[in-house]
Amino acid sequence: MNEEPTTPASPEGFTSGETIASFLDEAFRTQDVGKIARALCEVVHTKGMSAIAEQTGLTRERLETSLSEDGCGDLSFPEVVAIVRALGVRLSFEKFGA
Image 1 (cartoon, rainbow, N blue to C red):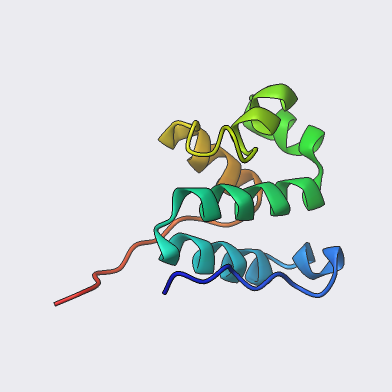
Image 2 (image 1 turned 45 degrees about the vertical axis):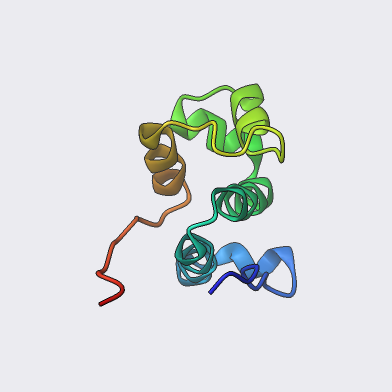
């Protein structure tokens, strides 16, 4: 599975935790760092970059740079966890393959 995650029809589509979790899950399943960063960026922008920066303790500039096309993959794992937590969802893992 290497397709782009399906974006909700409108920004209001990211109002529920279930929608955010489903959208980010699709992105993480691709295992493509760029797609994951773009998905995180899309949700963070919808929820408010400044609000997420405040909740995570990261600067707005750090979020913008790290979630940009040029900076994708520049976030540390603790930063990703903080962003995901601020979005009201959590990471989970499952076995794949044979």
